[in-house]
Image 1 (tube, helix red, strand yellow):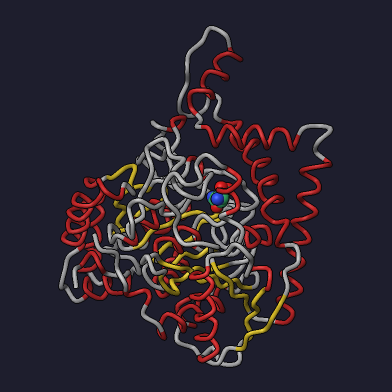
Image 2: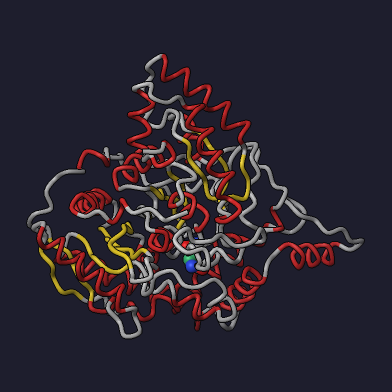
Amino acid sequence: MHPFNFTIEQARAALDRGEITPVELTNKLFDRIEALENRIQSFITLDKEKALIQAGYAEDSIRRRIIQPLAGVPLAIKDNICTEGIRTSCSSKILENFIPPYDSTVTEKLKKQGCILLGKTNLDEFAMGSSTENSAFGPTKNPWDITRVPGGSSGGSAAAVAADLCIAALGSDTGGSIRQPAAFCGVVGLKPTYGRVSRYGLVAFASSLDQIGPITKSVKDSAILLNVISGPDPHDSTSAHLAVPDFTSVLGQEIKGMKFGVPKEYFIAGMDKEVEESVKHAIEKLESLGAVPVEISLPHTEYAVAAYYILATSEASSNLARYDGVKYGLRVESDELIDMYMKTREAGFGAEVKRRIILGTYTLSSGYYDAYYKKAQQVRTLVKQDFEKAFEKVDMIVTPTTPTAAFKAGEKTDDPLQMYLADIFTISVNLAGVPAISIPCGFTSQNLPVGLQIMGKHFDEETILKTAYAYEQATDWHMRKPEL
Ligand code: GLN
């Protein structure tokens, strides 16, 4: 096995046994990045110098037997998560030269546990998109087929994990941006419960929906990273004041007798037949492990995409008001203040970001607020109630992550509505605030990965991780690697 193929678990074991040092492992990953990155384009910024310094520290703590769950483990971070002293661009021209003077809570926590930051990964500008094509730095390619998209918006992180350019990564998920790219790239992506992980230092897109989470090669790694990044944070008033369990401790427990809901609204006409088949086989596999399927209904699913694209754009229009040429990033000079604002925003934002600011400003404007924003909030409550009702009967809900496997680059770029509809199975989870994981559950005849989504109750990541782990151990989809 090549060291770049390591999971976190395998890397830690090899590092502790002294089979490889953190510096060697970091160099191996940079060699691989150098060899493949021109084809995948998953990183926006790499920082080998800083990474090797961190590797040196990790070597020291390993030698001194200091226990750190990530000592010497090289990770990649989505470029909308602030990293002290390393550019954080959000794939936007407006933040092209923004170097945060502070760390996000998650990167601070990762560093405290000894990890090595290789660099920052590509995304759709400000995390707005489903294909990583809306990036001011160019698109990322899917390692399984470079003519296809890796999904988005955390496409850089998912592609980097799938191509073994890092051991694991962090993404962010507002409407599916961790799970959908994980599904398209054949890796594991977890969106935690809203409030489980601090958003401090995550550049805000839609604050009531955004959540940071792990993108990994295995379910165990997902639990390991979640352990490190979770917990209350005085810097984020929406972080939950709840004790964080050891998420790895439930892995390996039986799922016999557990009930999982299968919502009829998630098996729709127009869905790819091969995706549907893979998911149905996965459901049978869960049954063979002793879990019990229950037919359920999430009746407001069909309104979720519309409600999401009103709420997310409304919040975005407000959050992005701060990029005015005064406080952060780009400034286009002018003698006149308003003109300076306009020129800066015109030059700094890409087309999709502008579209969303216009949409969100419209839905919040007086006279339209009640018809759009308020209605969408009411729909959000109904979607949330759908989940509450379902979870009275079942322990979790199992669905496809996406209606199709990875689509071709350029296929949906001219049709934003088609792009928005790609999120149909992931969005409700964010509206309800519940956790969900996507794991590999098959391949299409074109050798493209298919994702299985498992949704859980609020703050019950343990059940979905346990179930995902049981499924993973009983199958070998996660062992397949793209030919690169
Ligand atoms: N694709 C969705 C959007 O464009 C979700 C993005 C996300 O989760 N950040 O808004």
